[in-house]
Image (cartoon, one colour):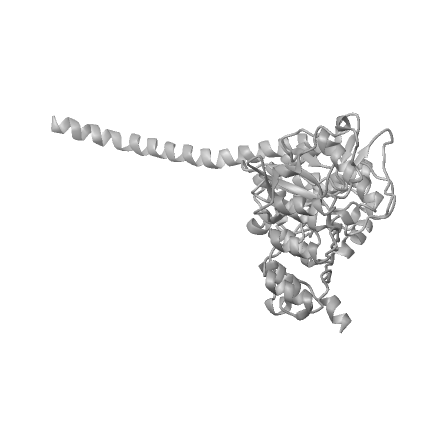
Length: 453
């Protein structure tokens, strides 16, 4: 019986503020199970029912499989009277769910201010973040007051860590770091490094960093929100792109990446360049995003991972073989990934789509590359040769993004000229044919006019 209790999950109403996915109403029959009836009544605001259950011996601190309590539920739902009752009946004020969220954190997230005051009155305290500073003058310039972020209609976008929120009347994208990683120094350092990178970046082809929450929980990165979605979703809708569109998109990516690679004093390696990390703006241009596993290339010319990269860190379909082999690497790993994206835009399918993802890097190590199945004319003007150079097995033989940009601009010039020749040329031919017809009929026309006179 006890095992069954541990397997139950309360899933009605608002969920944990730190949960990666927060759905709506769940299975009502599960919610009405006696073991979670208290949480259901807290969700509904049924004070009499709660009193009756507690008087009958129900545990006020019962937790479901997610570590959620009735106090968590009431704090999310804005049930001030329920929160007050539960606290008076002995509810723990600061229980943490499986994501590390407390009732106070949930109440703050959903802007239930009366509940925040009530919980604080009973001793609830927001957890101290690893980046917290005592001196106000040491607070980073990019710090955002979390009360300015409105998650009322928040939905998940792109990868699960990103959500939409409102900030000062503008839709923004937020990336949250859950409290469960606070004890993991590597993850805290990665979060700090990502902020360090984003703070320095300013380029039209790179997603704009707006600020962060680091002095309270949950810690958050706030960036511009691009409602057109990512390149992965775009290609799923469109399929193979026309060469002129693919080259235009490739130029956007290459310009953003060239800015990162030529950043001073440290070059920035993205190391996770793939279609879902490339976003589209309202004008149809692309921006490079998500620097969660990026690296600063400082004095040394290469970097090396402290531990092997896993498929949880990045997509294996786009990772360079030297990263998979856990060797030292440099900016050329991004050039390798770029080649695969460019080819995918022409082919209309991911690299080695027929292979399981975990087998793809092994193919790259053995110097296999995705086949060119599209018509040769779609790879004209040196496009195929450029792709092959960018995914060369020897990193030093791959071009820099500055060189890639020059090559792409030349290819784009040929494609644009060809398009003009086709549209403009047909127009000229039609015009000449009209003139020819006019000249051919003009003598008889003149004769007719002469006779009429």
